[in-house]
Image (cartoon, rainbow, N blue to C red; front, top):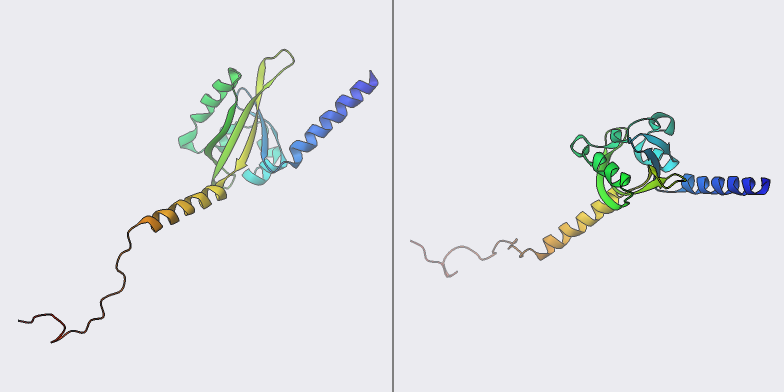
Length: 164
């Protein structure tokens, strides 16, 4: 029995170290949208220390025009559905808008009831900007070339132009 408890504790510690060492934000929340856990990458990405955000509503990270996303996400979670690679925008503590890719998975208790969610957040701001630059470059390359150098023909008699 003691060995089983020790094994379970070691497994929990190992899983916790995986979450803490992740480059992606790993955020836990309950079905009311309240943050229950927050890893180091979440601190780096969003700028909030865990002590400041745990217990707060997750919508603090939502731009005002996207606040209606959270009720839809929570409804899907209550049905036990997972949301994969959802691209959206979130806010950092200093008010910057960042592009993110979210995967949100339901967390179930021992009886199988959904009791919360695990949210994996990846900052894709730079990748999205690089993609956009590539698209713009291809668009410019496909535009017809405009004449950019003026004609160098001399003006005056003998150049094929008629005067008055």
